[in-house]
Structure formats: C-alpha cells, structure tokens
Image (cartoon, rainbow, N blue to C red; front, top):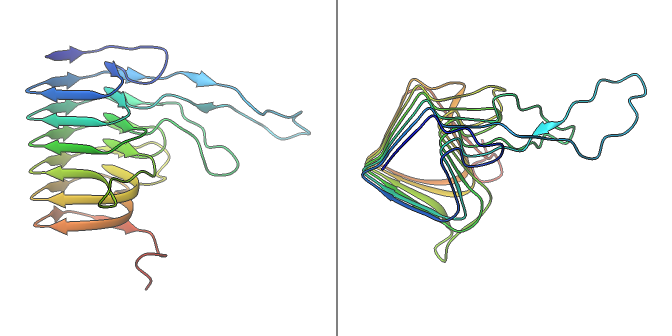
Length: 200
C-alpha cells in the first residue's frame, strides 16, 4: 500500500483506526484540524486554540507496522500549547491513542509534529508487561517538533522498548519518554527521560 499526500480535517492523514501495515509507504500525509474549547474573555491576554490533529499518516488505537517507510508526514503544523502545557498534534507519522504498538524494520525520515513526537507519539498506555510501544530494527532520521517540547523522533508517556534501532539528526531532544528499555541502540544527540524514573 502507498498513501501519498492525504490531508483530512482531523487525525490520521492516511489512516485512522487500529492498523496493521506491511510493506507500505506513507509520504507527505498531513493532519491539521483546529479545535477551539474552554476560551474565556481575553482580559488583555492573547488566547489561541490548540490543534487537535494527530498522526500525520496514521492515528490509531494500536499500530503494528513491518517493513514500512514514513517520510515527510506532518501533524498539527500550527499547534499552539494550552496554558497547562497540553495540546494535541503529536506524532508526525504515527499517533497511538490506546493499546500497544509494535514497529519492525521501519524507516522514519523528515516527519514533523506541532507539539511532541516528530515521528511517533503515544499516550500513557501499557501492555501486560508495562510496555507502550516496541520498536525493532528501525531507523529515524531528521524528524522534528515545531515547539521544541519533547521527542523529535519519539515521545511516549509509557515504557518504550527499543532494539537494534538508529536515531540520527533530529532536534531538539531525539527521544522523550518516561521509561525505556534500550538494547543495541545508536542515538546521535539528546535523550530525555523523566527525572522521576531516572533521578540525577
């Protein structure tokens, strides 16, 4: 399957829902909806809505992908953070909302997100082993986030398992997650873990 330059008005530029993708290519898909909620009279302060779009190529409950390529996908390009630091628009290529995900032999190049997870963002979720997402034999290169909030390549609230993967030339911090299990992983740049799990 090849999904090129799809642009819906909400999440999942190419696909929305539980996904199993094999030998697929996702190029230049985009999700950019804007939702306005909980606005109060300005009182002299400028207030703007946050983007509600996530997953430039795929937005799903759980995602299984093997031998797939994700390049130049975008989510929430105009995302504005809410006052509590939240805001959607995560996962330039993939956004995982519920369930767990497995990615194997995938390539992520030049994907961007408005807030978090230039390539992948998953909410705080976990399987029976406590993992949110497992990534095997995959390459991440030149992914980024517009706001510099967290995880130019991967952002995840739960546990991330990385095996035999390469993260290269992404900014600001390449990987942002709460807990991790890294095995034979090459990371060029910064790694951000939650201080609660890995105190200095």
